[in-house]
Length: 308
Image (cartoon, rainbow, N blue to C red; front, side, top):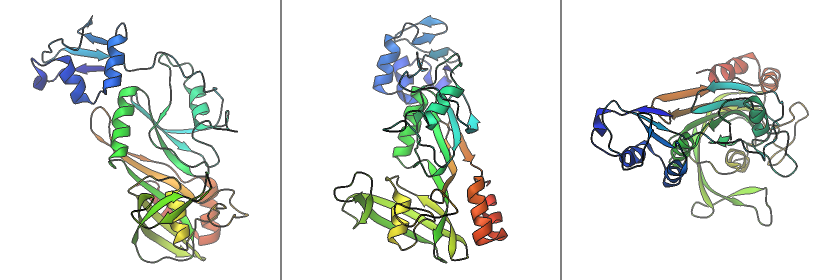
């Protein structure tokens, strides 16, 4: 990654610049160990080197080799945005984000490893956000360690805005904020349950009904926190489980997964600081469900929601 030293760093050291850019101590140590980890105007330097405005500073933040544990597999994925710092993908429902027991060759990580297998710089996917297997929508992937650190830090601080489109059972008419604790259900690895605030992990979700029809409600969900199964378990506890959620509600014959789509992601660019908005189109099966169960007006609202 190449930087032009700004006037504000005239006379300061490379170490000062690395700290201001958000380079972690571990990444800084890795850069120092690499043969051409830190180059100043084409020459290898240490972090004590003095900078001058207009100097070109190059940091070898890219991975040296691909992750051999991820098998490249050709799988259909839609890339929404692609830069040298990050990739945004519209993950289909039914695809796990990363390999786990029983899922070693059918994940988003496998698909990305295949797509970028011939890139000059290897891709080791660093997922900034992750979605349940049954949830579709935007997944943000950092392309190198520096952007991963910046984006992960922003996610931990709640500075990455997420909006989900959901279809819930029952009819809701008023906006509300759901504020609960969430914890593992006793003796279960998978199931979560709500609990009083102060117990478990705090979970906060802003719920805005968009339209109600056919015994269902189209919702905009904005989570402030990112707990496992947060949206699913909170809606179920409120008496409005996601349509098709067999874990916390009821399975549906006309949708093989729960009706939840990560439609929007907004964040500051990990290098420039510019505000970025990523929008994921509604998947065909969810669009069809909304048309058939809720009508054309609801489908048009859902489509617009996923575009703006």
